[in-house]
Length: 138
Image (cartoon, rainbow, N blue to C red; front, side, top):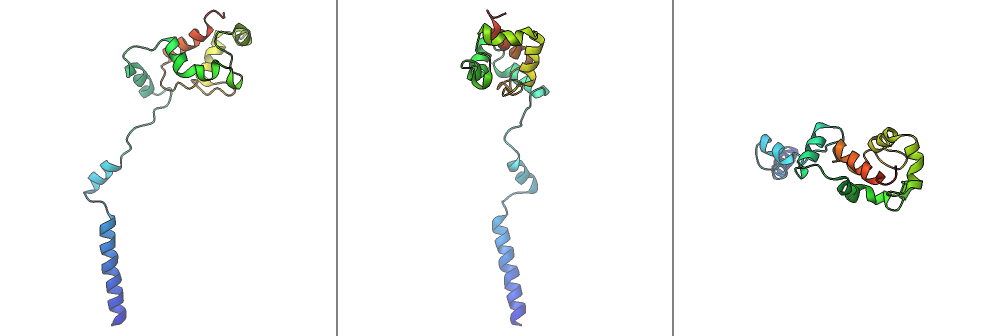
């Protein structure tokens, strides 16, 4: 009889404990509360292009892209990055052609990640940033 009472008390206490730990609401309301706040949008996906286009209405200038993303490495030549508008640094890259420089901008090169650090840039904005860095160089 003691065993039956012991088991019964464990079941009753355990079920009471479980009720306290379960959040209130239906399964749907619990799922809704647990949905992520945002969504990761990777470069090249439609959402990235849309985000870039709607961020400020108009496309950002090459200077704005440089100032917000590129200067981090290209101002001081961090990680071997060619310095901003430095003809000597850019010469070997330009010798390969602007298409090669563009490919490096899109896909990364050495320490530079793909698309630099501007994951929300449209291709046009990235190109404008690249062109801005190369002004007076080529």
